[in-house]
Image (cartoon, rainbow, N blue to C red; front, side, top):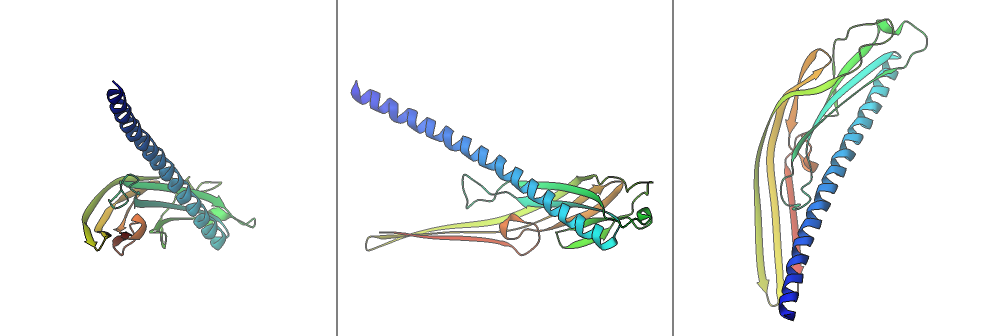
Length: 203
């Protein structure tokens, strides 16, 4: 009877532990996605401040970022693919007729600005509305695992290399803009390739 109760307790702990790990991984994934989205929104806001100040007028900046999110349950596996869209409009003027010089841009890979035609209004440009219309993502990955035992020492080595790209169209207001990039470190699609390695030694 006692052995049966112990066995039941072990099974219950195993099931409960698995559910707890699953719940934590979901919570961490949601939190990471929210944090990234807020980060991209703030980066776009700073870029808008820069462009509005540069023109001393009204400025708008829109951006679409593609990213592979971290795999919480297995760090040596490629995470899920997500896209993040953000946009801002700001007025930075010294009293001149800013509607004559208002500018709107699309920010490619957080480094290059593309001028986007806008419709003028008596107050400010149309609000920036950015969405991902469509995209195509490719991914190729290779992982390796080696385990060696030598005189009581156990050495394990894990490796992961991946390459991929994404291309698509983002809609900024009434304009479709082509965007994309190559998979790089950190899961970003800026180019460079992704490599990850771990080495563990246990005596």
